[in-house]
Amino acid sequence: MARFRRACTRAVIAVAAAAATILAVPATSARADVVSVQEVSPTETVVLVHSPSMNRVIRNQVLHLPGKPVAPVFYMLPGAGGAEDGVSWYHHGGVRPFFAGKRVNVVLPIGGRFSMFTDWQHDDPVLGRNKWQTYINHELPAAIAKVFRTTGANAISGVSMSAGPAVDLATRAPQRYRAVAAYSGCPTTGFPLGVLTNTMVVARGGGNVLNMWGPPGAPAWAAHDPIVNANRLRGKAIYLGSATGVPGPVDRLGPLELPGALIGGLPVESVASGCNAALSARLASLGIAHHLDIRPLGSHSWGLFAAELRASWPMIARAIGA
Image (cartoon, rainbow, N blue to C red; front, top):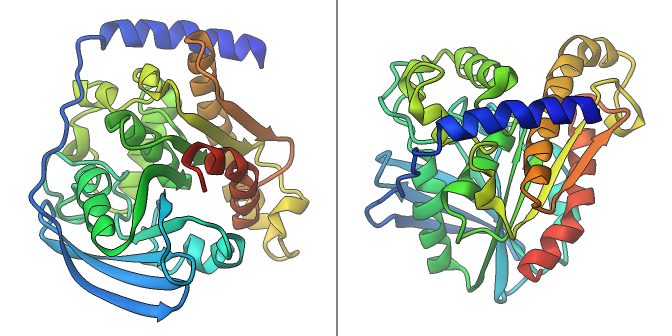
C-alpha cells in the first residue's frame, strides 16, 4: 500500500503541475424558487425546488428534529440512479432511524441520475440538461435557507457514483462546506481509474461523456479532479471510506445475493479503494488531515455504505456542530 501511495503521489504531482493554470469558475445562478413544502411528518419534510439552471422542479427530502429548530445542514447525494429508481439512503441506508434525535437537517436530493453531479458543457440527448454543481452548491442551499433555520455550517457526502462528485463540489465551493465524506466511490477524474469510472457511469445511463467535460484529458477533467485540487480541501473534515470488495458480515447479504456481490460489487469496490488511496496519498503529501478507512471485508452494498456513514458521522458532527 505504501509503494502504491508513493506511485500515486508522483503521478498526481505531474498532473497537478500541468493543470496548475486551470481555475475553477464559480457557478452563477438565478434565484431558485421553493415551489412547495410538504410536511410528511414532524421529522420529515419534502421541499420542491425549481432549478433555474436546469428549468425543472427537483424533489428534496429533508430529515429534521420536530419543530425545525436551528441546525446545521448535511447534504447527502444519491447514487447512480439519482434515487429516481427508488434506490436511496432513504429506502436502503437507514438514515431515518440513524438521524432521529440528531440536531441536523439532512437534505436528500432526488435526481441527477448518471450525471456525476456536475455542470455539463452541453445538453445530452438521453440525460438532458445537467447543471448539478450549480444546483447543489448554489440553488439548493438558498432554497433550504428559506424553509429551515440553519446555522450556516454545512457538510456534504456522496455514495458510489456521487462520492467523487461530492468531494469535487467541496473543492468548487470550499467556503460552503466544513466537512465532506466519500462513501465507496472514486474521488478523482484523472488517473486511469477516475477516467474509466466517470466514463462508464455516464455510458451506463446512455449518456455521452463528451457532453460532460469534453474528451478525457480536456482541461475540464483536471478542473474537476479532487486530486489536482486537493489543496482546496484544507481545513475540512474529510472521510474516505471503501473496502476491498470481498463480501463480509458488514454487507448483510443473503445466500442468493452473494454471487452478484462477487461479480459486480467486488470490482467496483476495489476500484473505489484504489481511488481513495490515490486521493489519500495526495492529501498526505500536502499535509492535509483526513481519515482513510479501507475495510478488509465489504462489497459494494448498502450494508457497507451505512457502516461508513456511522463511522464518519462523529467527525462530520464535530465539524458542523451537530
